[in-house]
Amino acid sequence: MKQANRKKWAAAGTSVLLSMSLVAAGCSSSNAGDQTSGKETKEPAKLQTLTYWVGLASNVAATLKSFGDMTVYKELEKRTGVHVDFQHPPVGQEKDQFNLMITGKKLPDVIEYGWTGYPGGPEKAIKDGKIIKLNAIIDKHAPNLKKILDTHPDWKKQVVTDEGSIYGFPFLRGDDYLLVSNGIALRKDWLDKLNMKMPETLDDWHTVLTAVKNTDLNGNGKPDEIPLLISKNDMGGSVAFLGSFGVNYDFYQINGKVNYGPIQPEYKQFLTLMHQWYTEGLLDPDFAITDSKLKDAKETGNQLFATVMSTGSGIGNYTSLVQGKIPGFKLVAAPFPVVKKGDKKLWSARSYNFSGGVAAAISTSNPNPEATAEWLDYAYSEEGKMLFNFGVEGQTYKMVNGYPTFTDEILHPKDMSVAQAMARHVRSNFNGPFVQDKRYMEQYAALPEQKESIKIWSEPTDERKLPPITPTSDESSRFASIMNDVNTFKDEMFNKFIMGAEPLDNFDKYVKTIEGMGIQDAIKIEQAALERYNKR
Image (cartoon, rainbow, N blue to C red; front, side, top):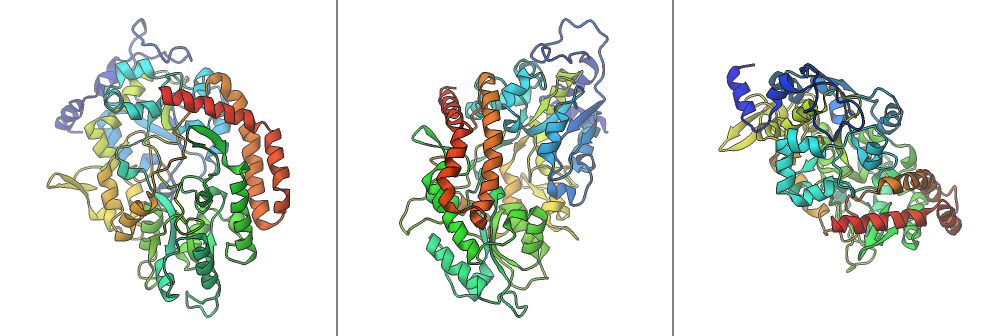
């Protein structure tokens, strides 16, 4: 690496170069993480290699075997001299593999995960001696992240636990424009063939889906199109069709009071509708077993009319993949429907600047937590932000009138989609420990249909979505025990109710079963957590 680049990098506000030679080794106990190593008398050790556990994003997996093959990490190694050995669980098995990995005595140095999914939450992971509380380390060894959190107290409020702990280097969406990325999309070219308007109510959707079922729209001589595909996996951020009834697939709030969606009468109304659509052949008969790869195949195979997808890896990705193969193919966002015309919309796909607890935590097995923090902090500097969002100037982007403009290598790739090409180089089109830049999305969502989707799926601003609350360490074990059982049962019954394997007459029995699992205790825990969050 050129000396000029080293100087430029060091000037970005990080102390990483200094840490490479000055940070002492040896802080590997669970109690050492929130301390500095000023009393260490050991010979300073240079940070040369890190082990890093993280799920392999599907768009990366499409063309690469490891994050280590991405431009961002090749360049980061040049700039810092730190080599990263990435450990990736098989795609689709991240949760199971995480649960196996985290029980080990020797953990990877860095673990990037959605830590609200840790049994008991991130505070429990600290108390369990798995990861390090980072507050003091960030204060002294991560000036870039510290400045960002100090400048944006609303972000910091989301990042810390109720006990005030920072448990990882967070993925932060740097602009409200980035808070929406998925929702319901449909084939506008097929809608036009049917000479029908965009559906607004659930009755409108029934009429359109019925027409799709009875019409040969893909031109293969028979009406074999799949009108709608949604599954329990789509019940998260977008709350597709479920949100029409005012509830979600998890906890939510109404005027500060926490409720649990899957035991509400409105949830039964949703299941009743989905069961009706299933029996009428409007819902994919294989919805319960369709994974992401099969869903992709159905969309790009000219079979699917409507489903839940994202702006980039959905609308943009599919449009790119079928270009020149399916004449007239056009995907557009559909508004979240209401039950009756004139009803107020209560749910959108809007998220928070920090959501899901996605963060790079430093494990208690890491012998150099301070140096690792300084290495991670580089991503939050101005140069680091450019690297993680846009890559290497001259290779993946060029500055045009002060605007980082992606090159044709990303925007006009050969033999792959834009989403896949971008994921070969940068992390901006999925997530990671950095601040996402709005300017990446302005180019990633290049199609008019993509830009419009962000507006459509943003309506309205959610009034019922819970902020990123966390239980205390005392509450977490009880909460995890309850919700592990509840979520397993809820997911199982979602499929059974819709497919008719379990009659909806047994919905009250289903609710009583969840009540017996302790859901009211879980609601009380979430209520207390919401009240604590509001006081942060």
